[in-house]
Length: 305
Length: 306
Image (spheres, each protein chain N blue to C red):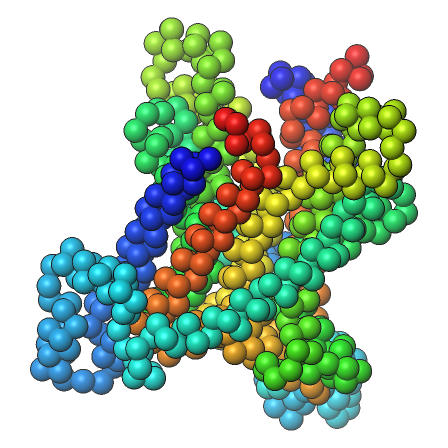
């Protein structure tokens, strides 16, 4: 168990190194990082001055080393736009995004698990068909369109919910539903198929033969086993929620990391882009590790191996 | 397993009409196929179906609701209304199909080409090559893709080429993983052994004996890949980081729709429906292909027939 966790942590370090290489190379995509920082105006002398100041005339490995040691100590340079260190700017926005992702996840699970379980238990009933049509549709609706439609219905037509910003808890509802819809659809389908598989197992018949109440059979014996693949996917969903937040935050003008990222990219604020990418990727990796560990705790078969 | 698959396919798919008859037996696949055909027709000859050019501006008729008949004498008809520049939404929805189809197909082709090649290489060669490729794949999967995509496109500038390249390169991992896994098992089959014994070169074995036997999975993944690429393109265009503004795109239309959602609902509704139906249709076809091409499902069906 401990060995497994240590191995996962070491692997995470390797992944983060990979992330740092890619983040570092983003600047080199155009082949001329100095021009990227300077913009269209500026003389040849300015260019050389900037090139020297930024260290772009040094060998690549030296530059990468500087970037990496900066990244480890939390220094990604100054934001070109705000003229402040980038990392605090990103961390400032992080709680809002985490809050949004968690709310989306809570919404997704609150609907996906009951839908999936009911569908599986009442397989091929009308209820099952309706649930699965909802789930199929949920997987095909683009996040941003769903967001706009929710705004149209609940805010513009019915004036029920606030649309923009993050002033009160009610302003979290629409973004959370928008962001969580896809995860809900996917988890519902997965819960259903996972439950169906478990329901056909011998130990289910044994549990029933013992005379246990149907509710206990379903919740205690079936759901516990069906949960294993679902938990794995929930972890993966959490990662995709973090990226999905980029679009959702833009739709709802929600002040989180996603909107910060889009603004930074549009303004060509390269140090800011690098900081955002690195922070989000780190969170992504952390979530994946937590899922893996959780998975081992949940499934004794993996633990014993 | 593969033999029974081939037998069933041969029985039912005599020529293109046989194959069509096969699809028509599933109502879901039929709906999917019909919508896909319509989208492809829109993409190939949009000028045939659209009443106006996508960028033609009728500034005096900006933000007209659907079914507006205007002009004197009532010469212009905007079935789905117009946007803030007086462009016909109906025409733009049709022309945008071309953008989505081109980007969807080419990006999937690129990821498929990279992924299948690397997957075959890793699966057939094994050893160090395999280890390195799969570790790189793991690292890439640990990366929030859309964030990287917007960073790359933000730096390189937005053009159709850049989107195709970024999305294409980003999605190779799934092909590589699946092809590698299947290659590992196919490579141990007797016919591969036999081919090796008679002195066939590695390239020949991989292309003639292994690739055809892993192609079913590739087709299924690629189908779903087209759908997810279309959503990604629309998402990037929605953020203003997709195709350049003069090219009509459902995602960019939705960005306008988002701006005018308070007053003009039609701007946001119709492009969204177009994306939704396209993605739904491709996914329905994909579900169907997965069921048909899955050897286990097929084997069961054949056994039942016998």
